[in-house]
Length: 132
Image (cartoon, rainbow, N blue to C red; front, side, top):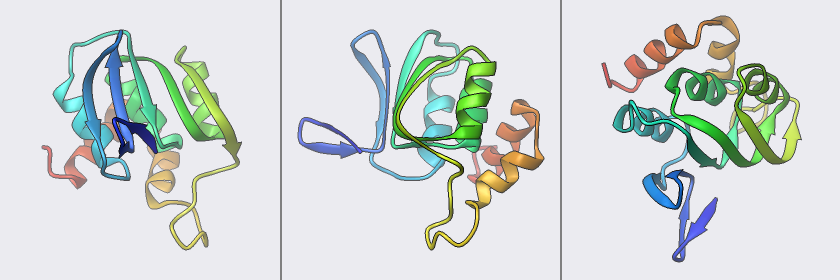
């Protein structure tokens, strides 16, 4: 969580010192909403609670984010973002992002492993959240 003015946010998007978007929701939905509402912007900084491969593919697709700060990032997310020239500064790394019971990969991480193109991945996720 990112605490600002006493409110715990899961995601904040900034351009310089101006907040463009923030959310207290968890999961990928706030990132998809953020991308939808900020299309066309460039050079933004994202603060997100967790960055896995699914979030990394959405970030690359967006074209709006230059730098990512996060407490936790998965190794595949780090590699994908670095390959696509997006700076990421995690406090800790983990092998992968797991589901809530920690018995398997997060379902979106599984989907991110099978859909390689960020555009196709974004369109798939957008439909799941009914942003189509």
